Length: 376
Image (cartoon, rainbow, N blue to C red):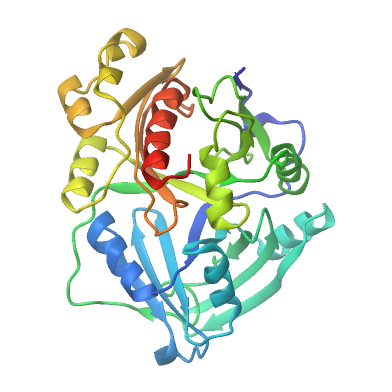
């Protein structure tokens, strides 16, 4: 059964030993960083920000940084064979390697998490150039995903030391994406609670929502999920694991093709989802489609909403309501060759939940896509 914990996370009895200001950036290891950056610009409306590579003194990798609202994506590719980056891509395909968190003190963040049991990834290091200094550190999490802690209060450059401004000739308009609402991680059988305890113990997060296999199931597949949030609620990490079903679930499919745990999807927020989704569709982004019958009793289920039902039906946007309002959401098809990473577009109108009322329709849509791939 779903449970949503309503306590104000800021009023916890314990001191927040890991204060986080927000998501600093997400780094994806990809086969071709320049082409990936071009895709995110042309399809998703990201703006070019910075780059690093041979021109800036890097010999092993090339990275392009794109930005929209508060969202920064770093697309990184190796420049030679036999690298750790290349091995990551060979094993997982294109995918998220690092979730970087913006903190005021990267050294303290590292020390507090490591002493609570985190495996070190990057000891605190000071990086500087003419624009100032950044301190970064990092820890391992599920699979080969890492969390970096980024302290940039003494830096005024374009992105990080070692990067220069990137200004291609053609810059498409943005589509109104604002910030990262949440990021979902898929872990293996019976591993969800292990990682829930990790985020509680090591990073001081709380469980704010729980979904079991009765909440998230269809005739064929099932999964379980818990949503972790930091003290101020700016970082939310749902953690999924498979549950027993008649067929292979979407989490099992992900684990097979990603070859282990990793980030399943990135939810990005907009204030105008109808406009945003129209632009995405016009730019060639494909979405999961729910049956037309989903909309037949939508207003009876969610009550009065501002949007026109015809527009929602045309675009395939889902709606759900909780005690504080409602939300609108839609999910892309996988944006990489393997059926792994995808994006969610979400607009919140008061709701703080995650669309439980849409789970059945959504996962049946995913199953139809799995059938086409022959992996259900």
